[in-house]
Image 1 (cartoon, rainbow, N blue to C red):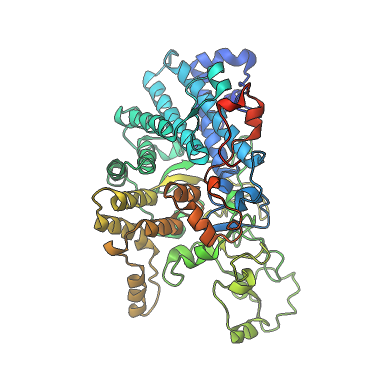
Image 2: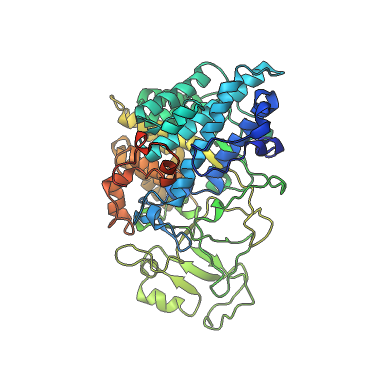
Length: 555
């Protein structure tokens, strides 16, 4: 999907600039084109762009990963309302952005749906495929809305009266539409029952629709259906496989056999979109002697999200490659221009000797004395105070899974790296959780699925076979380990940063509990009503009678 499905010039006709979704989109003299094949295709292209916006440049990760138990506010993230729940209200600009973005996307999709059946296509099977893709995207945006704002306005048409009144529908009403649309696509065979070709990567295909439906069944607590649908993707004919190496899984070469549905960005400057998420979880290192940002060597950090101590301690840091391979604790010397006179005991061999070290544990005094003439170091107590609050919000152990080594230059913020909306490991986690939570649990099946995704995460690089066996033993789980809390912890280890943590905590009724236990920034301010976000004030400003929608409690 690099060129064809990201941005075509015709998609510019679908641009939106209103402050409230109730401000109808104005297409002027271009309206007639949306009764033609090319005009309706423009809606599809624009809808894909709106999904890309979520994953590459928007406040979406701020609203899904921050303010949870696993990430705290970094130095360059100033939204204390969303991160810490301090002063969160209806005037929050990031909440407003997501609200408008989702409803604008649904306005496009509804306009498409009102025209598609009566619009002739040269290839009628292609028309059905476009319709199916839009139905899946409609379900995605509805899911984000109801999991963010709860009972809310469920737009069923582009009717002016319906939109201006914006009456609330229940979460159950939302899931009726979400699951009903996905079932129509899947059970009705609206997409070819095959995996899309690499040349169209990012386009929704049948396994992507099935995978998202499995996720929605889990959210709706249809556990047997979630198991069945996840199994159709895991065991089906689509050729998906868990990537054996975590480093290969998160390589920046765009595609692999584990990613089921990706948001794709182009390296064509004519159609480039902003994409900053790759730098969210890394610190800026150029302030330390002997190290500098270098494209092929080490990261350009955005300092947006800092791992909590709970997150750090959630891993077996000796045995779990999800910690070892996907987090950076050591930076090697690569900047001869720096003044390194404070470290006379370092040999300063480029790309060999340590220049910076962040230790997740507490260093002994003997270790500190040995290191202080060799390189810059920070241990657990240097990075966090006794309550777990970051000491300076600049210095932390970064997560590297999204880093992009293919950017144009060392300090470039341009990136065309792809992000997974869904990947195969999540399907194993969905099936495991459903087997734990269903009426007649199958805990052994759940443990088998966990071990399937853990196999690649077991460290086995010791020359001592006994040590390798010990690491394997420490990483092995059994049926007795299978609980809801375990699944929540495993999802944190496997899916950190992948736009789901807050939704996970909320759907399992664990958000307040875990924020107060593990997020020392937010714990003093979190209230029960924060489970839902405020409806933006700008929305009410555009309504003739704001009470037909009404604000969420507490705001």
